[in-house]
Image (cartoon, rainbow, N blue to C red; front, side):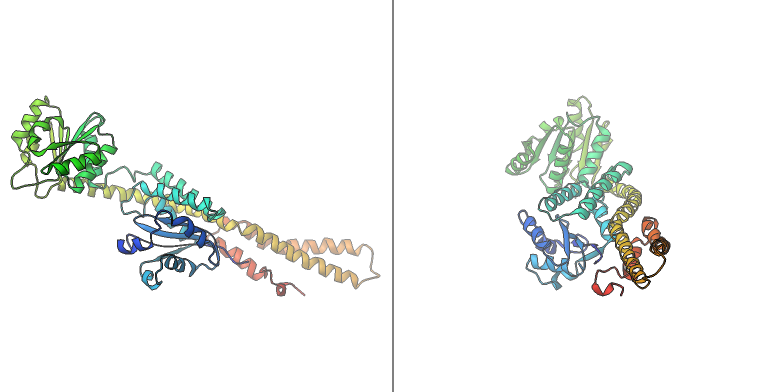
Length: 428
């Protein structure tokens, strides 16, 4: 019996640039036929594929999987294996399980703690299950990774702190306003960073968005994308009092917002608080705005400071998460290695019992005139000898879960007692 192993081969944002990752990605429609083909590779009993913008990974359970998975990735995308070799990593057995658990818990993500990867894992595992590529081992492995991710989120603060400009702006807004649902955001300048920040504010419940841009057509395009309202640049001062949060990505030779302009808006707002986030370099908002009562101004350096602090907090929480993962890997591996224990115990007992019966029969055949009680005596004595001899090995196998090197006992038993199933393994 060949020992089953779990192997994971892949590449990610740390080991391969985007131009390599995109060449091995499994776009919509390609994943299902790829899975069907993967399980036809020699040694592959079950498999799954994880393909996102930041990683492509193949995880399989089977025997002698060393070369199968890199060959599959190269062949599937029409590449020579050397083109991928320098970018691939391989994890085997416990480390493969640990890696999958870390991916599910977002410890291996570009942004530690981001939640999107878990949803992607669930979708791609479901596809592997639906086409019959994932079997008993990977069913348990993936489901355990989902519960690990849930534990990490419940028992650590890994996802609580903002680690992007947009999420930092949301965090600041929540610190100033009791609620966001009735608030209006104004985006000045239609740059990518500002648009992303506005999207995150909308995702967190901000009621509406005004888009101001020097080119009105661009303002209309972005407003359409965001479901907001475009505002001509020359009417900025008129619409400013409507905004509770103002995000700036535009700059010019002179400040776009001055203390006088903001103070006038505050009078119209009857001093209701305003939050200004200036993402432009050079800055587009006069720093003097921050001196006005109930006005809060943050520039890009302020946000980067928030992000750096929060990254440190997430790193501390990640240490707690790793402890959870270590314990869960141990539990899974005890289950996985136990799959081979019962068949090994049965095979060992059957083999020794077969030897005992044959030898008793031989002995009785040589003693035709023996005492009639001899068969019973031999049966009892030889059974007792067998039980005493097997007690140690079987106890070690049954207690494998308490050992550090569980697989060693199964493999050693099969080798020492020659349980491979070859006819030559039988005793004469």
